[in-house]
Amino acid sequence: MFLFVTVPNNSASTMIMRILGTSPNISYLSKDIWFDRPNPPNTGSVDFEGKDVRLADRSDYVSNYMPKSEPRVFSENAEAYCSENYNWDMIKKFWFKSWDMSKPVQIEKTPDNVYKAQEIAKQFPDAKFIISTREAEGFCASMKKYGYPVKRSYQHWLACQKKQEENAAVLRGRCYVTTYEQICADPQKFIDDLLKFVPELSSLKIPEFIESLSEPCYELKAMRNEI
Image (cartoon, rainbow, N blue to C red):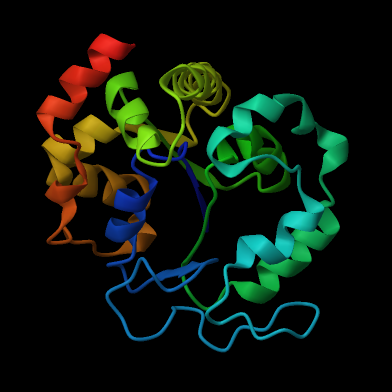
């Protein structure tokens, strides 16, 4: 089955992938940075142009066939995410060659899935989606570390928040909805919920470093005042 992590940047996607990476049953299109294993789950994968992509970021290879935008503020180019800007024949050709189809669960995680999810849902009618958001203070504090001004970060957060509400409504019955804060507060509940939502994952565990992903309280308080 296909599982699409639909989470804005700086909003729990790393945490979610760390947790999903503990399952032996997944294949994922990206660098081997999410997994506590020496090799990617789809070791030996070669893309449709013959390049060895075992340790490559596969999203770089497929990006020519999808809408383009600045990765951390993709909402600023929202109009690009219209149907005619996808070459699904090439995207699917790439994804199916890169995924290890012997695994029960194929995963794709790109932050701008927030704007792609409804198009993806049309192409993968049996797919499921993990939708997550984050409170504005934590999001903007995290973005500030990458040099983004608070106003720009907040506008991006607000656009993503609205889009995620729309995604949750359109994809009702096919999505699991959570937040960064809920995962941090009770990661075991998140795991239990995920295993019910996607039984094919079989088993998951809590990575040791999950608590370190939350921003310090004093940073959140300061950012609340800036916003």
